[in-house]
Image (cartoon, rainbow, N blue to C red; front, top):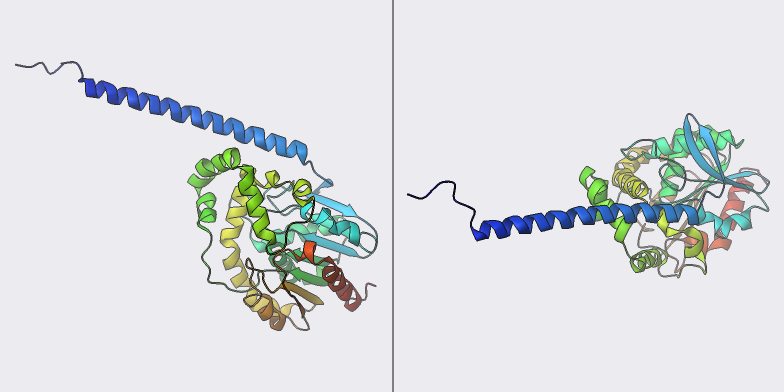
Length: 330
């Protein structure tokens, strides 16, 4: 009769050793990944520190860059952005005629997130309008690009007495049917935020980042020196990636809630949109929005993609001037 306490077979020993080795490899991978993520984030923040001041608004901190003198003009960046998107060249061109206030949206640059669930357009507009007021800009012109344009629309809808005019560049404003990028769904989830995002922060190659940046500017090229100034590594910080994904996931529902109220917007409004923008389509958004806001004006930029604040600056400056004139600020 065979003993029930016989030693394990050689196969059991091999499987046990294999599992042990795999366990060690996983632990080592996690440790190295966290180390690389921490190191990359520290290096990014050292290379790209805050450009402006940190102010306190309703118990929250907001990073603001203030330049120039004149009528107040607030600039709001898009997804995965920061104040550095505007301070590359645009702010210098505006500062001779306006007091320019560039704000990091919640969770980006050096403005901390408000909570873990992804800030709504209304929440972001409330914080940024209060930040502008804290800086003495009670009724600025508000310019928003891409996602920042949606925030600017929420500002005009929910805080109509706190701005003189709107300038919207390639702004999402109406309903679209294109499915959201699966990466946003993955990185916005609890598991994705804790498992996938650290891997991306630690291991995503520079070539991938460069290609992604080039894709945002297509069919134009990014301006000389833009990547060095902007610092894409700032947007690859773990908390920033999660915030970006969670805000992006809720963008469409937030816009659906805004659409019925566009008719309430009464301030001078200028829309600029490239006709070859493949990220925020002209026909889906601005061509509809121009008829939803009374007395809005649409400038279609021929052959231009998603980044008119860089590649169509004369047209952007002219649009701001038209709003200022209509608001009798000039």
